[in-house]
Image (tube, one colour):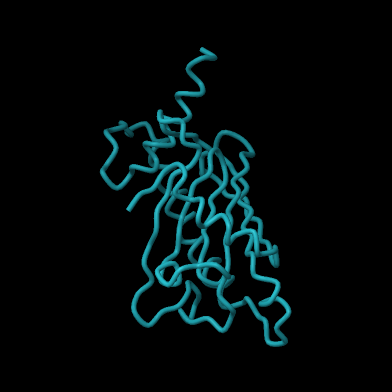
Length: 188
């Protein structure tokens, strides 16, 4: 389910209890920094994804030994939220950590993506604290996603490419494009 506007408010309260622990930065060719958006004036969109039965987090093992973020409901302990805060922040609260991706344009065909993993102070203070299971999962996932983006952008840059309508699965892209166009139009 997609959410826009103030639906992020209940998650925001919990995010304030986490602190940055680790960061990765990657430069990628052909991940274009294009903006999009909503004519409703919302500055973000996103939604939730339920964790599969038997899994408690998004990590290589699917399990977590970390304390959960305080203030989450029982339903929130079974979900991961994904928000795109325009223009360049991806915010992903999980039951036991928060992941951010900040995308910085380096040029028309290159971007730097900075990933930050945020954990509760309680988690970081644990003697056995080790975020490697989480970081490895997202490193693998990100590299696969970025490779797909690079291939898609190479195709879009080819002479044979002809743009078509958005697919129903691309509503976040369409929303972002509308948001960007709404902000660019007064300057034309």
